[in-house]
Length: 304
Ligand SMILES: Nc1ncnc2c1ncn2[C@@H]1O[C@H](COP(=O)(O)OP(=O)(O)OP(=O)(O)O)[C@@H](O)[C@H]1O
Image (cartoon, rainbow, N blue to C red; front, side, top):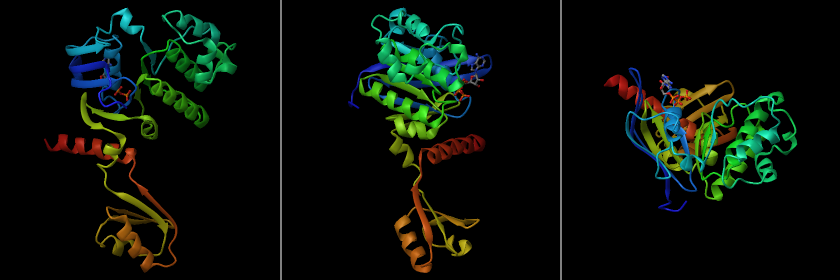
């Protein structure tokens, strides 16, 4: 990504209450051209609320919300975005091609229908009635509707829920292509491998605030541990006393070891057990970082 890519949308100190509940508690968020931002957080963290503000569906109680430097309620700003929300109510009797044409008519310079269909992998669904499609097929059509207007900013709220592995991979390829074309994308997902595969930047929300922000690598590196798995008769209790070993346990035939110095510990393990087999070494992923981050936050809250 360019270092100072243009800001396409922003929330500044945004606050949103629902009665006594604070859904957003002074949220700052910037979206840049050509960048995929993954917005992560546990249920109720405020992800959907943040997106609703940017879409002009909900008004902030305080703070600023800008879409292309304008109020998100303005139609000119909204014509530059594409949206795929968690639930879509679309006219069930229309055929997929009719739905696409209808949605294309809202935009000033839509993509050609065939190109959209190809990009979203729905060419074979165009003559089918929307209501008769499977859940995963309907999600792909919703993705096509979101990108048909050639948006500069695309909101994808848990886009791959209900998709099989093949459909998910194809969607990832399409998303990468849109980002390469300069489209900004906001992705919310509970599949952390999806954020890991696609995101340039990750923002973790908790209780309506930013808990952590940075690149996938930066987040991962907050969890310094490496995980070792192998088959070995080494005594786990003795191993857990070794220097640099944070955890060692047997799980059936497998021995699991967590360490912040994998080379040192592995060398010693291989020396101690020449029969050690089926070795796997894995550095912590985004999922572990996320779990640790949100757990730390809970612990701090309880201590306060
Ligand atoms: N229309 C509403 N009326 C009342 N409370 C709401 C409304 N919308 C959201 N909330 C509350 O605001 C908080 C934030 O919800 P939000 O849907 O933004 O979270 P989220 O991070 O998208 O969660 P999820 O991962 O479950 O989709 C939650 O406590 C939720 O119950």
